[in-house]
Amino acid sequence: MTKRFKAVKASIITGIVLVSVIVAAFPTTSAGIIFNLQSILNVSWGNETDQPVLPRGELRTLDIVISHTVTKGAFGKGLLLALSGVPIIINVDVVETPSWCTANIAQGTLSVTLQPDTVQYVRTKLSMQVADNAPAYGLGYIKIKATAQKAFRVIEGFENTFTLSFIPDYKPLIKPSLPQTNAKEIGPMDTATFPIQIENLGNARTLVLLNVVSVPEGWNAVVTSQITLEEGEGSTGTAYLVIKPPKGFGYHYDEETIRISMQPVKADDPSKQGEIYYESFLVQSRGFSTPGFEAIAFIGSLAVAFLLMSYFRKRKK
Image (tube, rainbow, N blue to C red; front, side, top):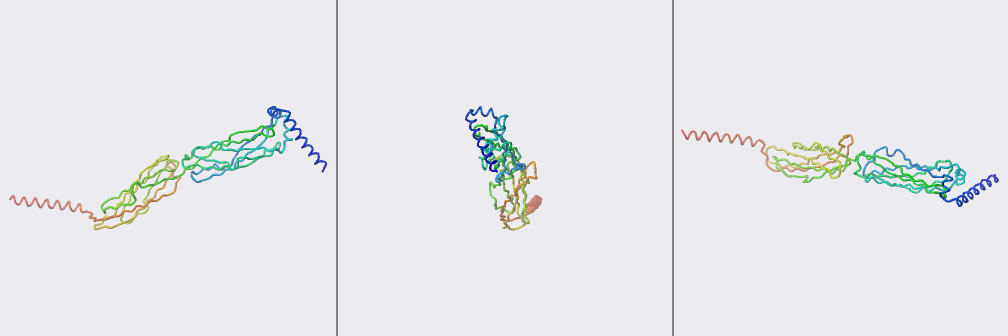
């Protein structure tokens, strides 16, 4: 056993000496041509990008796997055996992303030890996020550059760029605002109208569905049923809420709150629905209500006119 160990040790030392002599004897370029030793890298990842990435908030993490092999020519096999165990340094970098995406490599410098006729693997992680303005279901690309550094002067380096594709998800996000107010005082015979401005903060053409969800008994409230917001920052639309208080005969001192809901959905796919937003409006009804008074006044005017006509006819006689 001891003799065998000594023989192996001697062979390793002899190989190292031989490689050192060869490297010293030949220029770097000549050695590469003669032995044709070169690192080859391949980059792969799992199915983490099969599902769309949700803008704003989601941090998607991918497992990146880098495989390494060394090609060899007819004269390179023996030298490759002698170089067994030599470290190969590998660098992984993100070199290009869309303007609405950020991506980072967790560990960009890796290494493998050379093993002849063996594919070796190292792993790292890539984290990515997409911004609010990422186009919903538009194709995005992340370019990853993998570099194997030259080793021991005779193993040529390698560099290649790999493209990872993914799809941003739809982000149903709106921003309601009230350009006037959410409270009004009116007479019982009047109508309160509230404009509601809605801005599209999502990343696709959006339909906003509006409903009155709470209205007191005796009151009437109607809201614009839906508005369409185009894709793009600053796209807005205006809906209107119209409220009529009770107008029963007599003096009114009423105060009630009406509540509406607003839900964004993808314009061309209503199954993609977002969070429901709520807004409340306060209306105060103050004053006298005389429903039907106009008709009574009209009939009274006709009666007065008839009486006057009769009076003047009698005087003429």
